[in-house]
Length: 287
View 1 (tube, rainbow, N blue to C red):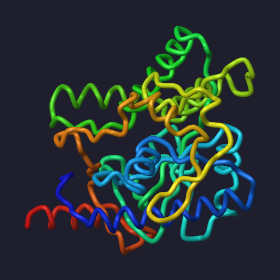
View 2 (spheres, rainbow, N blue to C red):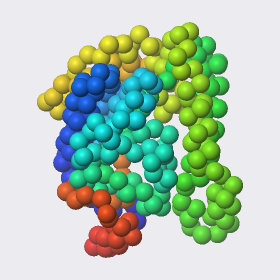
View 3 (tube, rainbow, N blue to C red):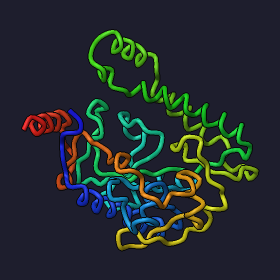
């Protein structure tokens, strides 16, 4: 069913920027430091906006500011926006938070049973050991739990019905989502407040880490005609993940957008039944 429902990518991108503007305002009002990261930061440097084929925004905070934002987002953000984590939605599978636009509707994958809006990903930049071996062991420990979370939420019928689906269903009876989420959070915050750790990790970029000095005090970067906060040394930050040639465009075959099972940029997901959305998506796919 996925990959059939179409929408205007540019309209989608600009709608996402409205969420980033709301976060920017909240952070400056309440003294929180945020940083555009990953493809968003790369887009700011290379395109002064979105990478043309990209369709999401990533930002990060220190662990302390991340926790503060998640705790107070509902009271600080305009009613149009909502913070979502595994703590307030049992069908939400990620270890990091999202800020969603309630005026839109987005279903990443129907099998999760999770309906939200066009979102902005929020990561914590957690301290990790300076020693490469200890750092990698730390990440692999986390990744083992993340893989269990993947199977705890995965569609058991992803590859059809049969023995494989039976195995996934049995595994899901054994995996406790709440306990796995709690374990993942315990691992990634293990070095919280440790001043002897001079590297940061989002835990979403493999074993990639960022020197704490390149994050520093936020500086402004142009993105879609507006100015947003990013790392103090964007080039070192980006080179840590993409390599020294990050300003070069990738081959055409590697320019991929995300695919969502359902998207409606102009209608709210509030009060919407996911089964109704499935029917709409199926009808559109059949046309």
